[in-house]
Length: 337
Figure 1 (tube, rainbow, N blue to C red):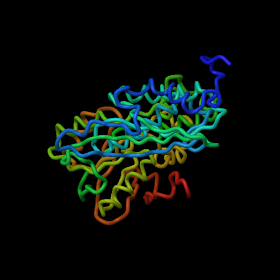
Figure 2 (cartoon, one colour):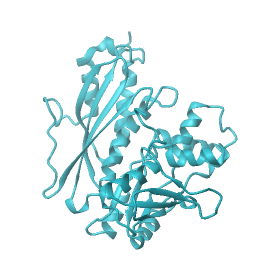
Figure 3 (cartoon, rainbow, N blue to C red):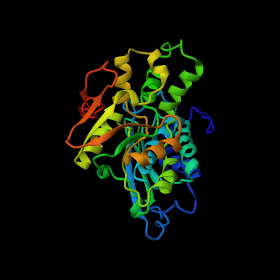
């Protein structure tokens, strides 16, 4: 077989051969030993660690996601968790499970996608592991650092806080539908189709929010989490962690107008609230500061509600078209639901 061709399989090169090929994606002064040595966080900073696993057939498939996009999404999912904590990234490790019949080119393109995402934030791949498995799995552990008084936590929401989203919701789910059904949505403009599909394949961690928070909050006293498991999930989780309730105004939630050209209003709202994988931040902070944050973030960011007493999160509709409904965790994606 041609060692440079796409027909080369993992079984042809073996573990060590594959590792040699993947080392070019990592800094040579960090890898090569039994464990990576990462420079410690700057004095006074806290180390933040997060792990995420992506599984073939659950989080990605060859029908919807190229190997480069699998890599990008794998990195973005973990970096988004760091951003939701207010942390800047230091590095990641990659655990890869594959079988002998996987093309070496698929693995190399996966790592290229990882690198493409990470390079935006000067974040290296500092190690990992590969093993044989009947199902392809990508497990990422990401490391970040943050000053203790700038940590964003789910438990910091207070009654009276405004609820802010940093961008549109429902785009990733709409993009997935277009990728699964290529004949669907052909009446959309090409720019609209590409925007939805890119939202699913190449999400952007919202590190751009952090410098704005540093300018307007000192110390930072904001609750936050990302919306990778759905907007409704994020609002409910924030309420649970903080021991509060919430009211979200349906008409204030931003979503791509093109969704309304694809499916019924009921389906649009299901995607917006429960579709997941939009990787925006959902934050709770004072109304005054929320206005400043939204103004600086620009298009797509919005104040969608407020934190209240009680222990439930409610979706209301000031237009009277929809009845009030409780936001629920179980309506979104659950691995063992």
